[in-house]
Image (cartoon, rainbow, N blue to C red; front, side, top):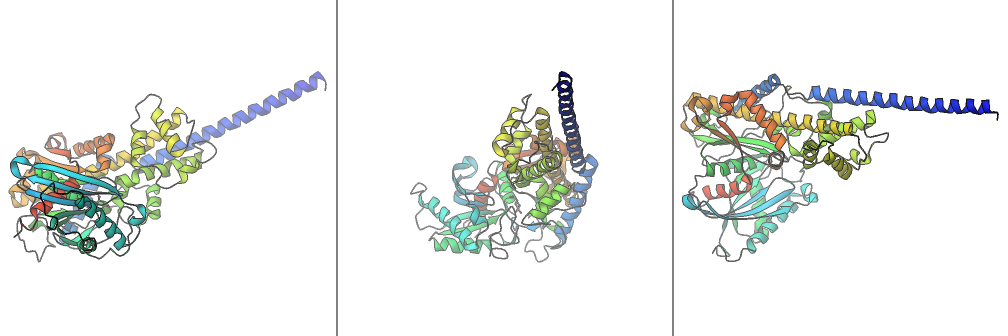
Length: 504
Ligand code: BGC
């Protein structure tokens, strides 16, 4: 080849490479712009400006009233718990609790020493609930739980001077929607949070547990069957009479509060005509056209084992936050080559991102987002991400967590408003505590659950939403307090309140 020809061929090759580079750059830019557009849409659809939150508060108030007026009229069941007396601190004795409601369950023993001594001793064991039991049969589930409880009791020896054959008093926290027939009985309405055990819906949960305990030769009497929110309220009350509301923000979400009996029209044949009653709202199922749902949320709901149910929970709680983030990242990967030309295989696996993962992605405050790089690598096997990509991942987590937290804050404000109105109408001294600023009285909201406990940004966003909605002055009277292990210890406290001795 002559020199001239070689030169021409070389120049053509250079031009070819340059064209490829330019084409690649243009594709990258167009992908990047597309990724930003997807993010922008998601941001807009998930937005929770103040006005939207106010609409949600009002919609929740309407649903609360409907649920208190009649059965099956509201998306929130507003369940009557039959709990009308809460711990005072005077309780004495040894009581047990079983706390079942997620992938782990706990068995506890609490020794109460009365006003001066309080909780003298508490022991607990946390057990993992094998996943096949969450979707197995009723008998398998209760037999397993009863046998763990029996082991726990048998290991205590003579430490508490309880004769081996003495009937022990048990408080059961069962964190699913239950229609209570009395303090110590109730039928399961439906499962939530990924549980789908056959043969339990419509049955009395206490009878099922009691039968399994008999099969195991365990002498225990279920003194109280409670929701985890109710356990948390009881735990809070043991410390302060200002606790009026309890909220769970964990795998699932829910709230309960103390309502005036005459504000519960559906309690027609009630034995009790005055005083207060704890209402388990089951707010996880709250639904309203004002909720900021995106197409991603619709798809998550459709693929869940309970489509159409637990709409609020699917936006707010720990079980779903990671899955929403994963779905958005997958969309970015598929439609905008966000993590390169290939979609990372792990990103296609449902529920692979947990809330603790989201929390560590979200709260990385290093300048080069090293923690984000590490988490993406370890959990999703995505390597070599640029800083810009990591920044967007953080933003996705921020949008999802902020929306959830602001919605849960709105739920709290709806209850505060309901309490205030109830108090004004009735002049009820106890509910007056909830009248907020006018009286200078404090209202405490007791909160339990891993999402709240381990996710500081979520807590901040929730608190900020409450302040925005009620104003600084009123917010200063509302204290949102973490109530550690409320659901477990609270059940033991309620077992004490409703023990054979306490209820002649
Ligand atoms: C259940 C509630 C429970 C909440 C928090 C929800 O899925 O329906 O009964 O209180 O989770 O555990």
